[in-house]
Structures are given as C-alpha cells and as structure tokens.
Picture 1 (tube, rainbow, N blue to C red):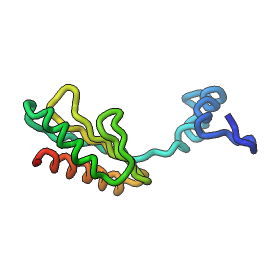
Picture 2 (picture 1 turned 135 degrees about the horizontal axis):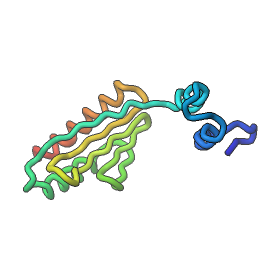
Picture 3 (picture 1 turned 90 degrees about the horizontal axis):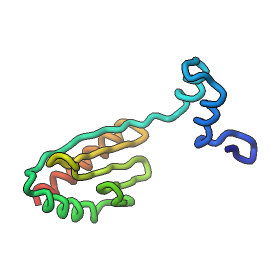
Picture 4 (picture 1 turned 30 degrees about the vertical axis):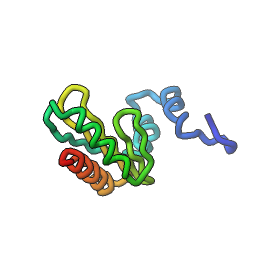
Length: 126
C-alpha cells in the first residue's frame, strides 16, 4: 500500500518488513520495530461485592453518561479523548471493574487512569 508519492503507508509497513527483512536482523528491528510508536498502556482494577454486580453496572453507565469525550460501549465503556482513551469494564470472571488507559505521554495516561478510578469509585459509592 502506498500513497501518491509512492511512500509506504503505515498500515502496509508490517507487510514490507516481513517480506524484505529477516525477523532477527538489525535492519528488521531498526526499520520495522523501533519506528512503531509505543504509547503507555496502564491498567488497574477495583473490587466490589459480587452480589452488587448489576447495581455496579447501572451506576457505571450513569457515571459514564456524563463523561466528556466520545463514548462507545463495545466492550464495557470506552471514552476517547483527543490524546488518549480509557476503558472501564466489568470483569467477566471476578467481582472487579477493570480500568485501562492509553495516551501518547505517560503523564497523560496516568491522569486518564486516575480519571477512570475516580469514575469507578463514584459509581461504587452511589
């Protein structure tokens, strides 16, 4: 895949890498791995009483409804901001709310994780 100037588009880069460079070579690492942006991804979980699972889900929905940012509900609640995102979801195996945050900068990822924690704690207290 290339643009009008013939430059490889980022989505096509893995295909070029696999085709042109041995996976263990320094060229593969330099061209194919090191140039891929790495963003901080942080996770946490907050426990709740198992018998309150349904109540917790309703409270989370209520808290998320007032969130700034674009909200999607594919796997829990994902709130997208211009510079990062947070996913808040009920664990499928434990009485926990899982929180995941990603941003371009670590400080922003930490702030988004804390925002998610605060949202969960408000929901659990309501």
